[in-house]
Length: 184
Image 1 (cartoon, rainbow, N blue to C red):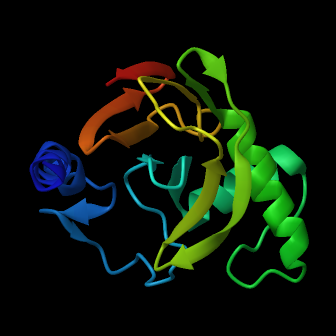
Image 2 (cartoon, one colour):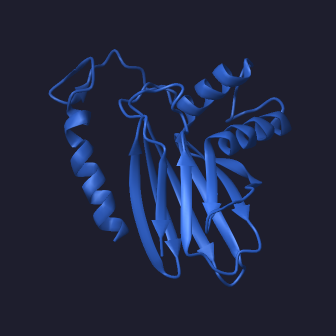
């Protein structure tokens, strides 16, 4: 199922990738530097929510492009942001936690839950942040309010995948849409 969704996503976004400003026939011009913080043509986040019945927890990860995430954190908190080589790791952890908790709100079976922050890590051009919700023996409905990056990009796409009881459901929210519900 995930493979089909990923193929669908790549196929649906392929025309966008062909028309990158400053490109010719889909090839990025040589004026674009190979900087790892280079501008990319797509503004997307991916949130994975998995119910772990054995541990009675909800495990949440949010994946964002590093350059976009640093930009929105800097804009929101009026400070210099470096998530890759932070001079003060604890300060960066606090900002990541605050930002995601303000922009990703979950209701489980119509009850608001508090996301417990676990940390973040870098993977190539992306930052993964991790959260969990404890003491959830069963989940029938997951309500999501996701406005991650909306204050920075009006073309933001937030993809979400939710797995409960071995069933996986996915959706995408295009700016300004920010609410969805998954029923199991």
